[in-house]
Image (tube, rainbow, N blue to C red; front, side, top):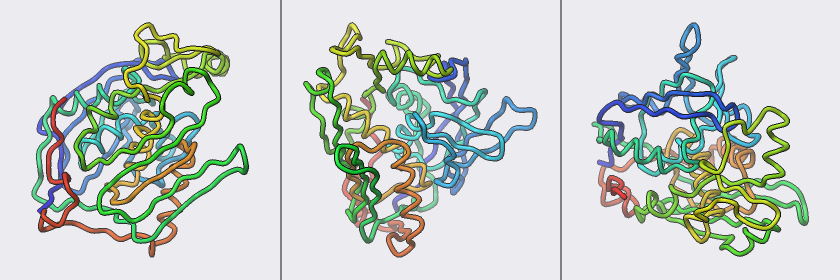
Length: 307
């Protein structure tokens, strides 16, 4: 049986929110089978549990935000991406402010944190959402066109293409395909950092955003070049970060996907729109599990290897 997974032990992390600049502490705890991933705002007078699911997404400007009533958690996508990459199904995340810490701007710190706590199997079948017919969403036309699509595939692979008219981005690979079943998430995707332009950072800060952002947790570019002294971690780090984000955004579905995802210039908003489009068409998917691991996609029965 392909089993659900949780953490072996509790673990903690501290940092600052990318947009709020607030200091925040995370405590990640093991959770029973079929719990899913739940954020718990423990800083509120009465703690509020915010389950991770597509309907909980209330804002996708600059990041993915989950809400329940007046309680919310911002910028969840990098942590969710790490959970997807390691195959974690059940987790309680206590958080002391409204924004997940940005750490180094990638998912690598979260992967290290989760692997250090240990990942263990649980005595219950892992439940997947298998795509059985294509689902697509599109926005804009011509030079403003963007789209995202899910198609049937026995596994989980993602193909992303970006298009930025910028010398530093143009000099790198702007399309990439990644198959999660190959077990290379930590090595090939997790270290890709978020990126932005100095002119955008200045504009966001004037609106009270990006207060915690800087060269230590993002790739920052002026009109011509990357400003980070150490340069890029991958030759195609920009598009790999978009794949990292997409993995996190799509894991908000609440179950791992069996699908081929492809996208052109997509972002948090379009990714969530794709999930809602999928859920609006029950004939496009089915829930499956694997009592015989030999019938599961290749690599899905393995715990994610260390770095």
